[in-house]
Length: 165
Figure 1 (cartoon, one colour):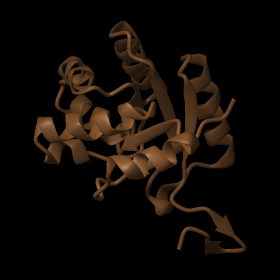
Figure 2 (cartoon, helix red, strand yellow):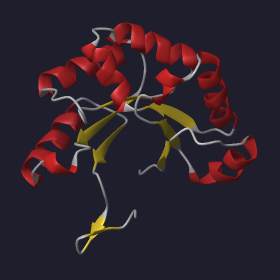
Figure 3 (spheres, helix red, strand yellow):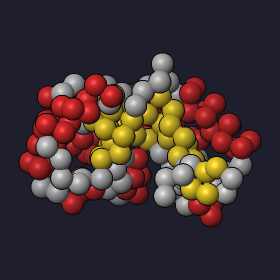
Figure 4 (cartoon, helix red, strand yellow):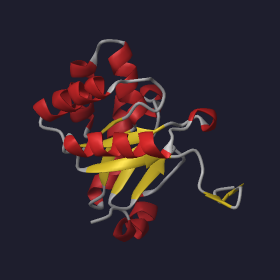
């Protein structure tokens, strides 16, 4: 089954707005490293708005990549849980992580009892994966038993133009 997964860029929102949208949302992702910029209580309050309407909240993959570089994955997972995140996104959108490194991250998240998504692909439009490599990464990601596999793309295109513009 598919899910509706939206990116929360930390623009102002109200409980009423989320209440109106909640029937159409499954997961809100607090993107990139944005939670690092806010006090913990503000992050918790934001997540509570979604939770009150039955919407799960995911970290962005950049946060786990940052924790990986800092050698702080266990501490990150503890913090994500304490803040109220429901899901962890595992990605290599910025870093070049090997299949083995992705598998180890999945093991670490699973060991904490947290569900996770695995995102394949790259943010940088100049460094996109080939179709063959994308399929390979999707197959590998699926073997790690995430809740879902997400495909990262810098834009949705039709005849050479970005439909998100």
